[in-house]
Length: 159
Image (cartoon, rainbow, N blue to C red; front, side, top):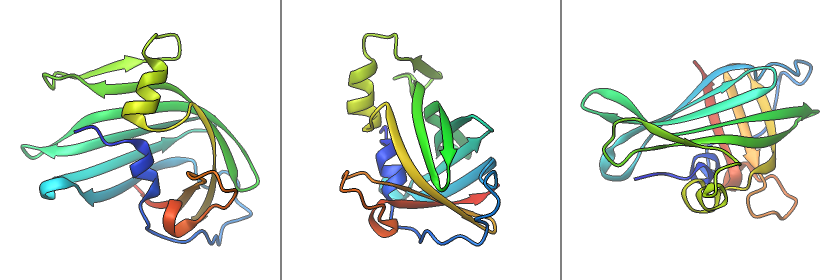
């Protein structure tokens, strides 16, 4: 049931052109992305970016309400069109759906959660661009040095 952030960030959804290159902080704010998951379950990803932090909430629609099933929190720095991101906390839905259980780097299960549940490293770089109300984030998931917007990009819309 838990979808890795890698899947979130690798959906082929857009290009990386930017009309707002002169606005370095244009990515700060709340962004959303919708998709249909397995068995037509509606999925939503909410990305909140502040001046130094990010939070991604992965949600599924359950009984006409949005249920958080994974939350990833972290910090970042931005230089040019590259964000250097570090995950500092991961929340995973409890088996009884009663809420999230949070993990941090000091927890013994941290490495296993990043590798197994979240499917991403603790620190990584991402290329970004903002064009109007669209934020494109591209990860070099296969570590080939190429940020491919088709294979490794995802597009959010400003909320």
